[in-house]
Length: 478
Image (cartoon, rainbow, N blue to C red):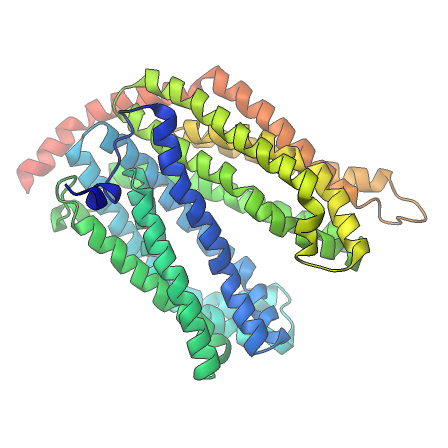
């Protein structure tokens, strides 16, 4: 195998120095997350520049409905990544092949459901969200095109999860970069050259994601040396389907919980006035990039743990966990220092208003240290997910957002009301986030040490042994 081919091949994370394997996997994911940020921003930039503010509002207002789609996507992709990493680590070609086959079948079914139901429920959902009459038609057209063409988005996201489960984060990155570049090019072409308006932006996204999905399928089809991709493997076996959903849905629900908490806190933020709203937008944009290393290392730990759990290398899981947490905390510490020292310069990228820069920096200082706590949470949660325990991270997330973040934000705002701040001090939402992140890290560490995730490993071993007979019957029958 050539050096280039080796670079874009599955990575066996059950061998080699743990921290090197984790970093090798995390860096392409980090670059991919940055590209995803630009991908998400491209539509808004093109629409705002070439069409106008109402069109920009239409694309932005479609976000809550699209998030409902991504909840299911994230769930299946997470479950697929965990199962693939465990079976690949165990060198179990049969189960690996069936898992990937089931993923492709479920994705096809889910895509067809969204393609049919999505366009039907779009208008009622937009009306339910009180979408302004001036933009509701644009929103409807934009969403209908995305729903009808959702098969590309579904397959790209799910198969990227499969590739990452195999340890190949570089191919997933390459296909994302191709999709991002193509999306920007088609955005400008459809909107500026063909004057297609908002539908042109949606069509550009559909085409770009469809091509990236095709690239993923071609890549997997060429991996015959790793698994078998045949019609026999596409059969949706109950055992695999249930386990896929059982592993994945908690992660999807976690994403939904975060979304609902943000909506609840956004209502409080809006009460503080336009200046605080603008500061919050600036901080969240900086936050989006600051959080990327944490999410990247969290996903890297999931794949690393999954493969080594499958290979029955608990010693490597323990060692890799220590290395992964140290690296994640180190990177987050550097980011925190950069924000504290150079934060004002980052704020000035978004605004030249001195008062807004000062306010944004004051609020950002409250949040900055929390990134270190999140490094611990994401890394240890990644380990637990990789071992098959996706419920514990979900419950911790639920506690942090519903029990801590939202009540603390509203509580501090209520207690700090004054003539100057009639609805409370704007720091309340950021203090609540810091409290939730810090408590989340402590709770996650306690549950990690408690070791329920280790029991999941032994439970899975028992289930694998019990299913041997079933697989032999299936093979005999086919």
